[in-house]
Length: 214
Image (cartoon, rainbow, N blue to C red):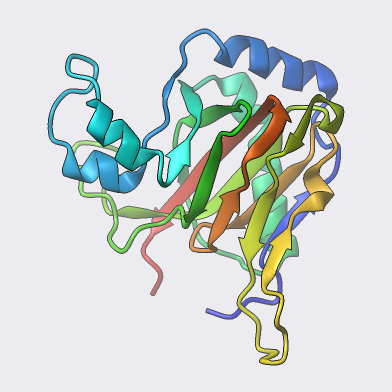
């Protein structure tokens, strides 16, 4: 799908106070961030039987960060209105209905997340859950750290363009470097977080779901 806007941003949309409160709240229960393939291929309860060293090594070829899951109404209240605005202003107008839990992420030095898309080939198959038969349509990333607190850790997008002469399709989303900035993008857009060179980068991600595209 070729889009006029691959992402839509709001600079300094969230207050520094809100960002600091999310960091404090989210830092209480960190766990190793996984990927969809790891979750799909490992069938055991990881809370009782953690990843082996071999599995961790394989995971870190793709992703190395620490996360915690948040589901607090005060967070959604601040962020979700920007998802709705971006969906309209960017001209996507995707139909969506629910949001997943917030993923609060901490990237320390040398941590990163390689190229990936947030959506999958098939809708969720969870008959007793609200997300059943829905897919991720709109992703939102919130910058919680001040850019003076870390180096590297750039959110980058792979831009699919009609301009075949465009050679540089990798675009760093420098627009959201200021603390409290937000970027919304279709969940099928490929993106990555480059390695943090020093310091710590905090972010908040929310995936917003709807029925499959028709």
